[in-house]
Length: 322
Image 1: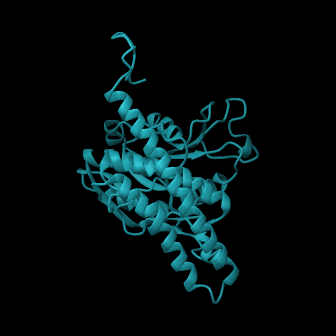
Image 2 (image 1 turned 90 degrees about the vertical axis):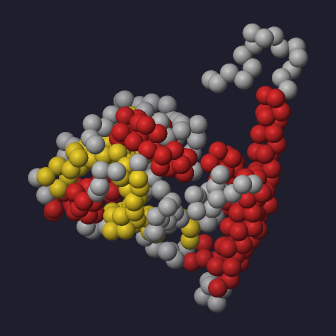
Image 3 (image 1 turned 60 degrees about the vertical axis):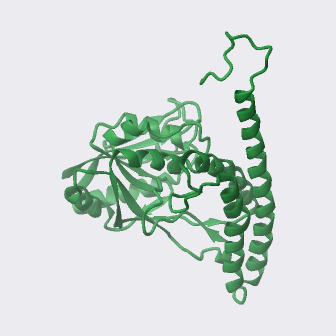
């Protein structure tokens, strides 16, 4: 069996069994094509050494699939860092635990690695929704079907480049925009390319009230990356006015686009369409609140750093980076 010079890193929650399907597919393809990665590292975010792999303990996995427990739950950015730092291969492949590789995925991975030029340090894989209309107009989910998005659901990075870029920023607490921040830094250490046939299918999500609340929290991260890197959400949306741009996309463009999409499906999904319109309007107001709240906090911190309190002594740790 040929061993590819790549370590697959998959962050997962220890109480979730979603990763089992992904691992089963990888094992099946390894047997079918006589190809396998050097290692698959499943990093259990929040898992302890005593419970490590408990969800999967009734399954016998090949020796090249390992489970790593992080102990404290710190989010997917930290989990990916831990898995990547232990990799001994030239390449690291990041996958989400809820993706399904295309039937020829491992063979295409071999082809990509065999034909890539030495200047390339990042390879984007294709991410498409498994069932784009599973929930009718309420179907949402991540996609990267033409490149430029750098989704960590399917992303190849040279370990050397990963280390030069400093890995993922662990101050991103949940799975949102930590990959955008990473991509903004990693692109400065090598060329990037898009591999359309290196495809995974992502499980779709239903746009629910809980999803609205989650997305609303992420707009402070969008504003943060806009200030740091000069684009809103993704590199193809450059901006010189971070706050105005974030408001436009969070309050107008995204909710409005979802409303227009749902209206086109009204004749076949009337109730789902009404729900999408209602949730989108609610999300617009909630997003605006979170964006302005984040902007106010930022301005207060900026003001405090420019005009420190006069009672503070010169030996105070005001402004120290922790």
